[in-house]
Image (tube, rainbow, N blue to C red; front, side, top):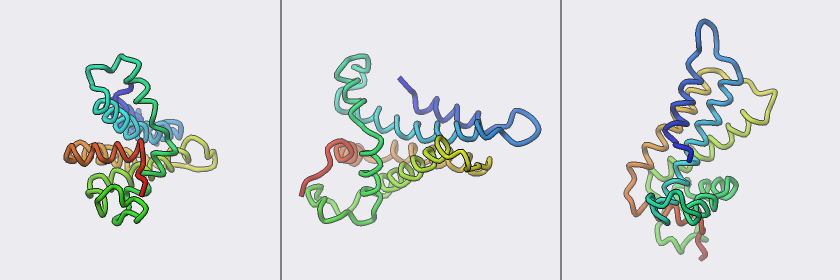
Length: 167
């Protein structure tokens, strides 16, 4: 299983030039991708641990739950969750908005996914060392904020990511 902390360590190594001169574009691009995947896998791991249990990580139900998250759906739901006021269509959640830590994570997820797409698929885009380091720090902060969020807030958010909310 991918460990989000390992992905962050990898991203940080890639943004440390091996000697004189700037890091190669391939390293900066891979760092940005690793930063995004650290956040992505943090959400998947928390969700599967909560729904199936961390002691069942080698089981099929755990794998099915882990794989139930899709990049596109997470992006869409994170874009909604990042708003300071949830749309009326999400009234079933019975909250006016998610707490700041969840909104910040959601905003970071959307930003990191967009930048990962640029890093992975736009050959004309150039990234600076500052760009890559900033995005790695964004991922680190988002994961730290999510870890500190109250358990019930995290569970509601994970349920929203997986199942949405009907009005």
